[in-house]
Length: 105
Image (tube, rainbow, N blue to C red; front, side, top):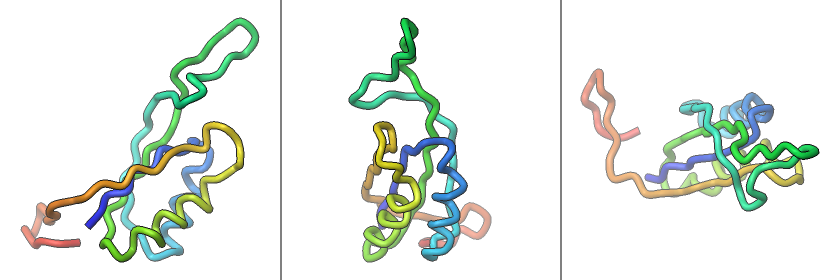
């Protein structure tokens, strides 16, 4: 299993969640976060904003489904401008449901 963490523009959140749902990934965890990328924030006049509001979505998928989920996120989140975001894909050792104790997704 893999965990995909997507850091995206907040205004693209609903579109990305809808894209994941249509692609067959209805379970998503969302967090409002702040950060900056390579551009080190944004400058407006003399004001520099080095921490920008972003949304982090997390989804855990079977290994064979990583590409499909990644494409759904990328297609929904992309504007073609700086700050569209990043995908981080990491291995997940195990998953279990708290209520039932059942292992797996």
